[in-house]
Length: 442
Image (tube, rainbow, N blue to C red; front, side, top):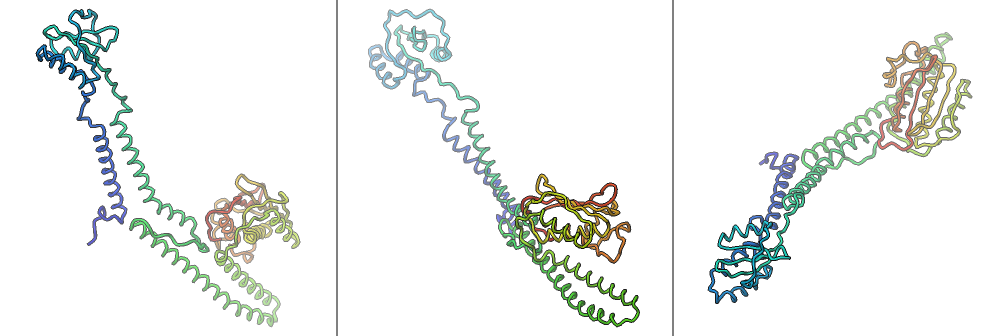
């Protein structure tokens, strides 16, 4: 039998309902404990010497026979030592001063008009009481206890304690319920095809465990799909290399020089296309580890390599600048960008500078540039430039920028395209100084 959602403690609804019930029970326990400690129904304990006991003592002495009053007064003094009861001589004259004491006024109202209450200087809390038959007694009126301030009262302290307790309970429960969701967010950020992270832990409410299982299955299916795609393309590449090699050998026997050269160019383009596509697809399968790399030396090496091939490429920047990077991937990224620059321009400049977060690399050329509306899509795979930059349609396959962008993203950086004045293109790479928290497919 399946329980309703609010009764199933394994689900989010049941746990929230249990939290509400637990909060209500905690509030009742706190309030009950405060009631039992303070007991507002018990009132002031007159046994400690209040005006009510003094009035009763006076009435008892007035009702007792004169011969018994001395013994009764001694008994009352022992019962109420705080009142300090004693008899007064009959010749003491009551003070004529006005009585300005709230407790004394209450005592007068309680005793009635047959009794007289007067003060006994110099102690303002020492009073005398004249009984109806003329006998007089003296007593000390206790100083009334001041009520606690509003913020220090028992009920206000109880309310504050209850609010704090329930708030802490709610925060703990909210953290327990949202912790798996935070783990999902971190897993989604760190997910990549080359990641070796452990599967998501399947814990928490039933709904959270179901989502964790679904995400783990999705990661497994995506990884298997990409593995199958890579294996299939690798097999196709291997099978195509053989007929391409045979065609190249057979083309050598073509007598027409022009046809033979065109055939060789087409075969070279097919081989280059296969290698470029496989390089793009394999790039995310065997990631290089991040190490402390001298970026300046790597950029100088790229500039020297292209200069040795006869291109006008120069490096501008510091002699040394280190950061966490993948050296081979970074070299490949910059090489791809410089290849595009020398293909469409006559002069290329590689700049390096420190940025607020790490290092900034810029590759500038004096070519025709890229129109503004195409800058965003140029970073996507298999997208070629417009006719202004695509002067040789057989020279590229639209993968250089996308591979470079993927490598930069794998470093946790950012690649952007900008216009250069008066003409040309500037490719800007921002690399962080620390290793990225997540690894994406390069």
